[in-house]
Amino acid sequence: MRLPPHPAFDILRFADRQPGPARRWLARLLWALTRPGEAWDVARALLAGKRVRARDRAAILWGARHAFRPPPLPAGEAGAVPGLRVATPAEILSGAAAPAALVVLTAPGHRLVPGALDAIAAAFTADPGLGALYGDAVVLGGRGEPRLPVLRPAFDPDYLLAADPIGPVVAVRRPVLDRLGLDPALPGAEVADLLLRLAAENPQAIRHLPRLLSTWSPFAATPPEGWARSRRTLAERHLAGAGHVEARGGIQALRRDLPTPPLASLIIPTRDRVELLQACIESIRAQTDWPALEIIVCDNDSRHPRTLAYFRRLEGEGVRVLPCPGPFNFAAMNNRAADEARGGLLVFVNNDVVAHRPDWLRRMAEEALRPEIGAVGAKLLDVRERIQHCGIVLGTGGLVTHAHRHFPGTAPGYLASLRATHRVSAVTAACLAVEADKFRAVAGFDETTFAVDFNDVDLCLRLEAAGYRTLVVPGAVLYHHEAASRRWNPEARSRHEAEVAALRARWGARLDADPWYHPGFDPRVGTYVRLRAWEAAALR
Image 1: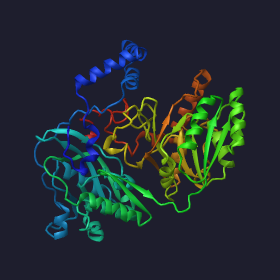
Image 2: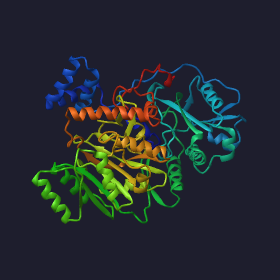
Image 3: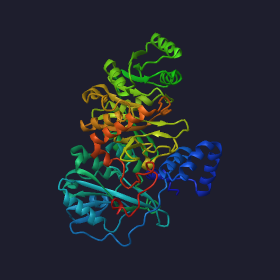
Image 4: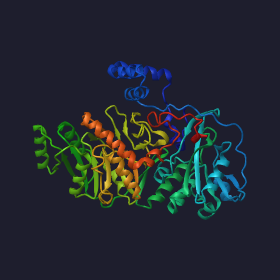
């Protein structure tokens, strides 16, 4: 599907230029010929009836892609509901909209589906504290046929400023609309501005209804001429002179000023594998434009002479090598280094991570140093230039999984989420930044319960419980040779299973549904790959 060349549609370009079936099968054949061992793993899993394993192996071999089937749309008109009116911002501003207790703001090219108004009215009736509500949509092609699902996450002001995943179809209580008003100086961004001002008063007053409410016809109508300018103005207002906006098409990065950048303490746990550690540290030194760094290497009983010689060299160059003897405990090593760190910003980095863009730390720090933000993660690519991490999703893959795992590293991501800074439930400690005071306020990593796995997920959820948001910054890009330093054995597997059980016991209810990931996606495959059956209640 090739969308019109307007920046307002950049958020929908996640399915642009996907190859057709013939090209996909040819590419798969070529990959299978170049990697016969991996191809045989896929075939063997299929022959054994292990479909989930086969899908996972196929994603590793061939990469992931969106495989969305267009949903069926209900026939007919949206109808009418007493006390509810549908109006454009222009009609509200001109006073042409009839009075009503609830107003559904909309725009040309957007149309409510049958049953939408009843669902909206019921949601407001059930929740007297609800001020604004939005739902999901289906993008229509040039002939009016359903093409793409738009399944939105819970309300996220950072995402709204960067890419606007919500859109113009939003239901609002009339008293809220009358009190806050719409800004006529922001054509095309009036609704986003209204939601941001309402969220500043009470974030709980805005809710996402995981249900199909409208259709979106990009070929039928384009946003106002000043749409891009309005979006930029909105972001600049939010920065209030303490930064600038970098726009790339319809996606924006809000770059925040850091007048006095604090010392950043980079903490790197390791055990031998000196080639990994050396590549990590040398890349950080060459590809980090942060003005004040200290590097702390946590050594867990390294023995190889080359490693020990490298440690002596590092110490001569001002790097601190902190002995962390005993059984491998990733969380305890990081906690000990954090206690010794002098920096106001802690940056946890795996020894198999490689930096290759100088601004990676600055982009993460700009977010992590905000008072309301807790942990901040980066976009990590694997050795095949595919997505290894861009946030952690709860409740998928049996427990947790990485968002957009195995998608191409250049992919825009579903609703531009591989380009836009946005909220997530957790980020990986392979590259995680957090202010030292916030980290210590929640007692750091839980080294007793989560020695090796899930300590990052648990940390992010405890920071969230303390009132801090977790963000992923796709503009911060590094490579991660995941598990290059890990060795599985029966003892490690037993410990992993115990930590899985502990995570379920502590965060069971939170793991059931991730507010930043839509329940309409199939949890049995990779994230953002496939939808559940459209008859599922969440999409009706």
